[in-house]
Image (tube, rainbow, N blue to C red; front, side, top):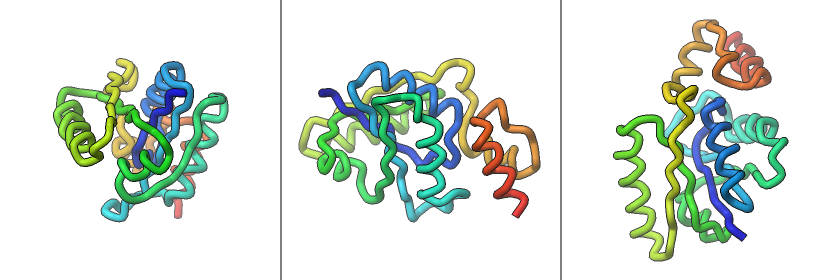
Length: 160
């Protein structure tokens, strides 16, 4: 059985993320979406909220599971018998950064960890969670970027 992980902060989940999840779910028997609890970042949504939004977003996929984790990705992968990382690339600058991470993960893990890079669909090449948060913070309609229930959560968060 082939298992892959698509890790990220997903703050919030976007249609770009969902595109990568959909495509990777067709490539692997099982895809774990790993919601990173990163203490170095100051997320808009809690890990629990981000996990809930992802679970709602991927419920149509029978082979996708959402799990939150903290610590090193490679440690999480060892504990969960996962050997492939899926990463989405929007631009060449993403590749430069992701290549460094992929190579260091492989070196540090001392096991076979491969990274599969998927280029984002052209419809989402410009899209990032930070752009969505920025627009939403000013009350701009972000329904072209995220599922409707995420729009509602963003509106509620910024009205507080």
